[in-house]
Length: 123
Image (cartoon, rainbow, N blue to C red; front, side, top):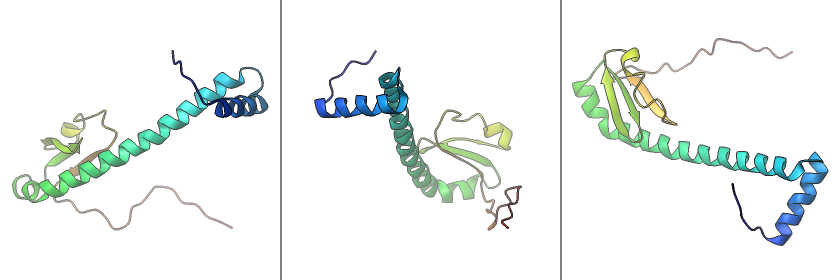
């Protein structure tokens, strides 16, 4: 259970707006929605930080990976090398709960164009 004090002006405006939008269980519903939005935003911020850490780790490891593990599959998560394997299946289980991870075959080049598998036409 959360118990907190809000500034009076903020609480009054929040309750008034929630009642206008939702009616009955307005304050609870609006508060849950606000918390979900806040969490979603901060998940994105955490993911950005993890992505940056993983990119930095890859750049630091790149030469060693290319020299010693060419053609192998690697996983980088939480800013560190999590594991190396001979196939994607072997490394798929490394850091499964990480918000961001790099899963790649060392030495493989990315195609300059990616096929998404669907096409949209505008008239």
